[in-house]
Image 1 (cartoon, rainbow, N blue to C red):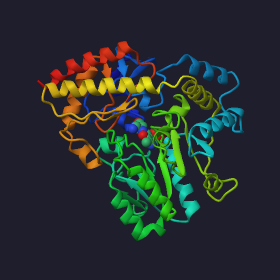
Image 2 (cartoon, rainbow, N blue to C red):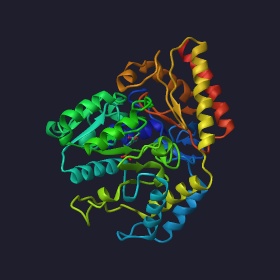
Image 3 (cartoon, rainbow, N blue to C red):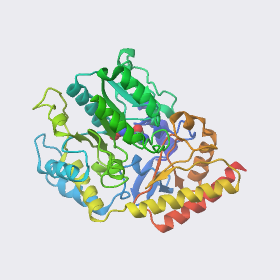
Image 4 (cartoon, helix red, strand yellow):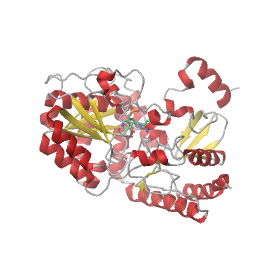
Length: 426
Ligand code: KE4
């Protein structure tokens, strides 16, 4: 009989932890992870035949909800012509033109197969372009499982208590300087003393892998000014926020233009994808025209391109961002009111279709603040919601996503379940 428990027992025998990505194991929230049988719109259906309202949206890609007919049709059409060519194909040109058109910083772009590849390649490119070795990242930010970026990382690394992963040589980690987010002085001091060694600053402009943290006024502008002053490449990791918070992501919302941008998730329409792009003078350092090597068997895969192009065209044709913002505000203010009326300390930072729950008294402006939140309260609330048919990300260091497939009925049902789930604190 196929149910989550039996599947998980089988999986644990042959897949480390029973999962192909650690955060899926529910290690921090407890219990057995459910296995998904199918997904459609705003809902997941588990192999135990339980329907859940989904606020993970496969960690971001499903901005249109699951199994959107236009995306399914695009994949099916591409499939009829083959699955992979290993040569240039027309869909790669169309995808690149869309990204260049929509993302302010991108003059040229290279496709790859994951957000990790995108950030890894952007870092290597910045090092090759500047001839410098060190990079600056921010505590709690997660940029995929790149050796040089698994230093004080967020997301699953933080969730499972290994923000500095084993297996990363000290010599590699030594090239990564970790500073606190939202603290411009620390960046200014570091660059004043060692800018000639620093190739790049990589930042999630709105960190969403240690919960959701928003920049203080002037912070991102300050990073831009400092990078320009010292010739340091500013990399915005918009793997999560790209096309999620607007067609041009955070860089369009803020008017701050990085030198390079990493993308992923939404641009693949649910299929494996990544991309990095930026200024021509930097991008032209990439092989085959430049000295920085980067490659991929399945980069620009025709099925992923078809799904991604359909996803981006849907966003262009009818941008869902105002409705996503309104649903985000409704859920975050509902949660805050429910907690306040019960005297439960809760912060619910929200922007667009992204929000998270920090069970703590004060607003979270830095990673350290997020570690002070009561994670046991999040875990209890997560499980109370799940029991009632609501799937939040299984870690207080992740961020919830709303899709354009969420309807009023989902939002009102969600608020009902939130209300009822607070009983877990009684
Ligand atoms: P992937 O290699 O997982 O496609 O992308 C890595 C990545 C890079 N940059 C940012 C800002 C990211 O959020 C991610 C991946 N996000 C996590 C969720 N927080 C993916 C989920 C998982 O690891 O299973």
